[in-house]
Image (cartoon, rainbow, N blue to C red; front, side, top):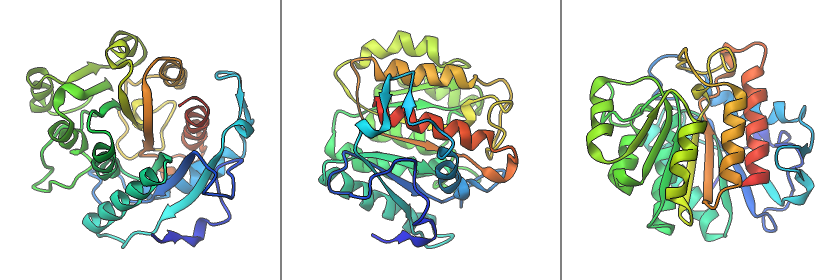
Length: 288
């Protein structure tokens, strides 16, 4: 597996140099080939890493220091630019390797389609896998303008792979009528508008389960995260998402991997989106 050396000197704060001794591995997926509105999330992984330099290594949320966790930032996967299908194959192969090596995969996107090959690899190792999906968008389309490989399709693909009863979506406030109808009739869980309170209601159903968590930064209101490709008004605050991450960390759910996607730095000159994302990643490293 080749990685982009352009980012070899830029890693998440306090990343360990040694892959072998790491329990968690951060990796970037700089792909935004299928976005339906504004491209730019390919630059998200690098900017999240850069923003992490401004973080404290200690988290008062988790009461834990980054030096207490052995994690390694492997850099960005090197993709054949514009080739979505091959890029997805490379992601799946790399996550397969991480899982064989006993690592917790922590991915940085990139558009949300990158979650799909991760789930395929995760499901092979964890056949009972459940998905927690935190997002503004339902992502339940079967295709977008005739293209099945789209950032609007990964959760529908997840329903087909995992079974809709094992998919739990939170914060959803955008989608086609047909997507909400599918959610209502399929047996999946889709909670609109909020994250924290419905998560409290549904987490007990996942106690003891192997769970993968995917977070789209656009679940935040654009006031908190303007740097994303498809911003949606009416979202949650950074505090609510932090509280949700802490809630999951302190629950009896076995989180086996995670990603954070759709940070698009070109639309946020203040860098507040990348700054928020880096803090979320810190809490995930320490808590999950």
